[in-house]
Figure 1 (cartoon, one colour):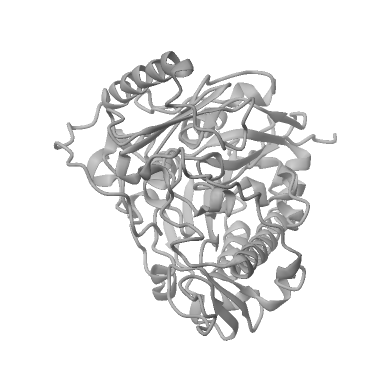
Figure 2 (cartoon, helix red, strand yellow):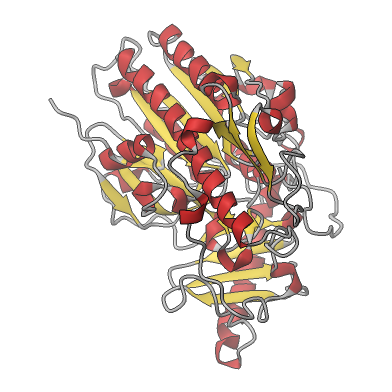
Amino acid sequence: MQIAMQCVLFVFLFPHANMIASDKLNVLFIIADDLTATALSCYGNEVCHTPNIDRLAAKGMRFTRAYCQGAYCGPSRASMLSGYYPHATGVQGYNSPRAATGDRATWPQTFKDAGYHSARVSKIFHMGVPIDIENGSNGADDAASWSERFNSAGPEWKAAGKGETLEGNADGKKSAVGGNTFVVVAADGDDLVHADGKTAAKACELIEQHKSEPFFLAVGFVRPHVPFVSPANYHTAYDWEAMRLPEKVANDWDDLPKAGINYKTSENMQMNLVQQKKAVAGYYAAVSYMDAQVGKVLDALERAGATETTMIIFTSDHGFHLGEHDFWAKVSLHEESAKVPLIMCVPGKSAGVSNSFVELLDLYPTTAKLCGLEVPTRLQGKDISPILDNPQQSIRNTAFCVSQNGNALLLRNERWAYIQYGEDAADGNELYDMQADPQQYHNLAKSPQYAEVVADFKLQITRKLAEIRKNDLPPLPPRTKKSKAASQS
């Protein structure tokens, strides 16, 4: 019987009655780092080549409105893996959620406790890129979540090859210099020289080793996170001169509060138009390299005969600006940064596209439900599995995301995107009509015509935070206001 697969930059492969001896569905969770959906062919990009991610999207449910809960790595991953919003755990930086959650099981730990072999390869909980990757260290990983765990060391920006620094290099005299910066390296050697190639190889090995038992395998790729390092052959398709930058609008920042201007801009990075185009080309090359590693893991799953018994999830921890509004990287709560790609492939389900709002926080309860595990009632995410039977189903009316150490807050609904800086909006706010202005050029927050809309969103955010903080965790100590997160990794 031919099985139709349903994908969504999560990817779920669903169970049948007589699948494996244990009757347990495996979970293969694949997460890229700093990947914007706008870079993927299946989300409409006509330049960047992502055939392996596209092949998932062609077979399954693709989510168009999936949002992270933190617009940079640390809080996003801690939230997704713990099952709590950042304001519930207080994890707004790069630490593990374990201190706040105590003995409450994380997402992979729930599967481990249910008898699954739970394995991690590379970055799942937060790791500093490039430092933890260069050192092959665990970062903020949580040992209790895994049966075994593996790190993938790589040379990062120090890789041999043709390198160039794009950030803070106005005169163009610097080659590849620095760590968590905009550096492009067309590297010598093959895929296995770098962390993601090693991660794919280890994931393939683990699939073969554990194909006869239920497994939860989390595979973390660090590209396309800066530095944009990938083997030289992935760069040939992306001539920087052919790259097109987003539209540049005169006085684009004039209606933004100071807190709404992103921490990385063309201006403060001193990137001219040539360097901006080279950044896009380097990012696309890194995406193509990562996509090739995804393909290796999917092929290994097929060789092991485990495709029909494995739920596959593909996503990213947050999005990434590629010059929109002259913003770069993450942290911003505009769409390019707060939204994530999400694909789910489920045997027995029809392919489709869902426009329902969903959150990364929903992965934990959804996968537990699909695998027949008890879903902890304490979780703050929602089960979105009904969407797999009906793409028109709406599970959420809004999506919520935070940034800047919790001082920036986004509430997004069908028509509006509202961003507030400070719980009392003391540092300003933004309001966008997503039907009339989907690219968010016109901030309506100060317009008297929309005063009632803004007032209603302020009230909704107050209620949302009160709901989030009403949880089973120990009370958090009083928070002091911090400046914008400055060293996101």
